[in-house]
Length: 134
Image 1: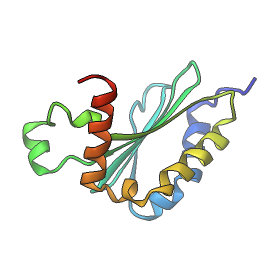
Image 2: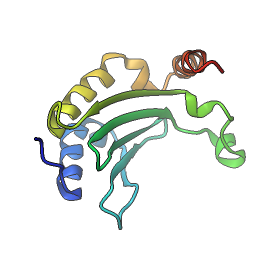
Image 3: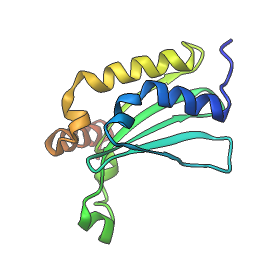
């Protein structure tokens, strides 16, 4: 069985795997600094990359466009949360380092994700709504 990393190990692995984004000026935010929950965000002016690992070993990388000025003032469009890129896996199928490596490979495979391409993310949202019957 693959051991669950503690908060410090998790943050170290994130910094290693996503160093290319940190070097590009992304800010690393710990979503729960007083809590041992492993969830962080890497934030830029274009996108927000969320990385989480649940106590059950569920691993996820989620990328959403950074809300624009109007969204920050008036809130997100109701369907905007559907407009996201995701990679999901289970700790145990591989260790955290390998899951991060795979996730980063997939993330970098399509430049539109890191560019925050509006049309691409809207297309992801439309596809997700169709699958969900919305």
